[in-house]
Image (cartoon, rainbow, N blue to C red; front, side, top):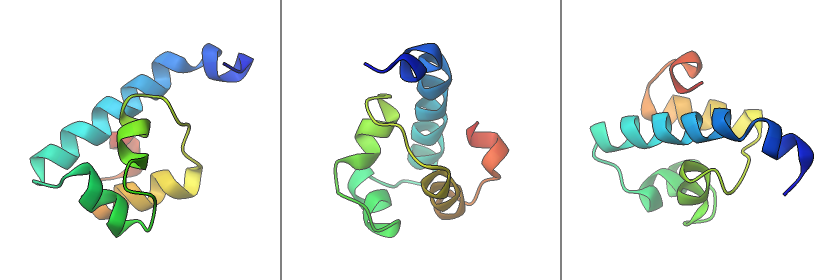
Length: 74
């Protein structure tokens, strides 16, 4: 694991928890959300488990699809 990833792991875990919360509230599967943001089908699960670090563009895309303000995800 990279030094930066370790340093901010708790923040990425919180991001993943928030994405999962809003995704479930909207009745979307991980696969459906991934499809809507044009990413690999297992990518959302990796983000939610803090196994992958999404780019800022990806976070914006997820927020838009979930119809939440980006600050609500962060």
